[in-house]
Amino acid sequence: MSAQTGRDLLLKIDATGTGAFVSVAGLRSKKLALSATAPDITDTASPQRWRELLSAAGTRALSLSGRGIIKDSESDKLLQQVFFAAKLCTWQIIVPALGHLEGQFHLQALEYAGEFNRELTYEIALESAGLITFTEEVRTGEDSQ
Image 1 (cartoon, rainbow, N blue to C red):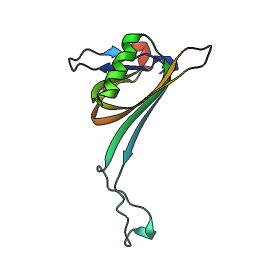
Image 2: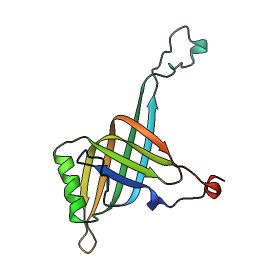
Image 3: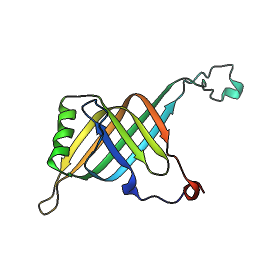
Image 4: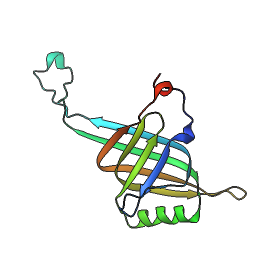
């Protein structure tokens, strides 16, 4: 797998529930975090009191945060509508040369900032709110080396 530029990670939303995904504004920096917690089952009988975890249990979560510029008024309006309605929507996160993650997310934060002589910027934070599916990118000859 060759190196990828940060701008290639793409965030899309299906705010209408119809399966029609649209790209969300111009995120300049993005961070994707997958986490998994396992229940601690350590007790006094644990070997030398080393922590023991219960396999295949616990919870998994995905969070995404990003910062960028407002692409257009339609994207901005869509994000505001989803935020103020506290609506869970299906989002798609496309990671080039890897695949895409898709599922329900809660738009946890939407922040705006601006300087006197600069563009308006925003920050967004998403938290998974259900099952997240992963679809691996199909690689061809050169790409798979």
